Length: 284
Image (tube, rainbow, N blue to C red; front, side, top):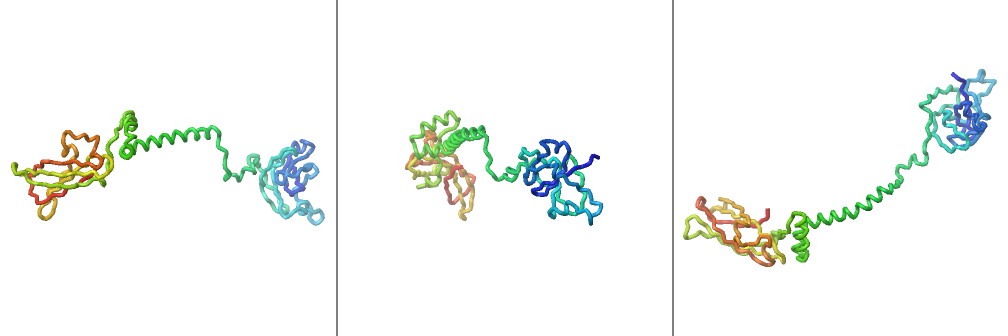
């Protein structure tokens, strides 16, 4: 094994293991990777071998600070280079033979300026920024189109002047503009259930559905419940608008604003015995 040489930085007393080739560069002028002091590596060569007689020959390490940092030759840079490295190993000031340092474990250059800069804002690439800028109007248009599709019935009901445009858009998108569904704006003004005197077991349901809104509403479903004398359910039936409204009704127009729809329906109740009824409106 070749004789190892060590030099010590006069600024911070950091000890470096050096090679003759390294000291031959630039006449031995080197820069400390710890405190960045420029010094003559040849003039600061020291020996780490134990002194034969500690009482008569003072140890050079004993004159230094209580602790020094032993570093490999790769941590020592030529004088004009501006590279920082981190400490390798700390040993005491007593006579300690330094452990050999493998080439694979030598210090690597560390960017101290950005080592702890993880919380700093990073500059976004221009291409990515341009992509985000271009995507904003596209997303806005997509959101507006989705809102138009979802609220098309309400828009056409509250703003009738938008119906032609919405109808054209729905024709292209494969949808349709329908009357708004608002069961809270509907009511049953009057209803009656009577037996048909001409046909035994046949009931006649009459009712008037009132639209109290200022815009057209879709025809609701009807739920008819027949009850016995104890108000217990005997039979219940839900009827779609096509079952109780006349065949000439235009369901796409709905019940006109502040208008009404008259219901007259024949019901076969020959298999049941009932004493009362309940009638409700709902949208499925």
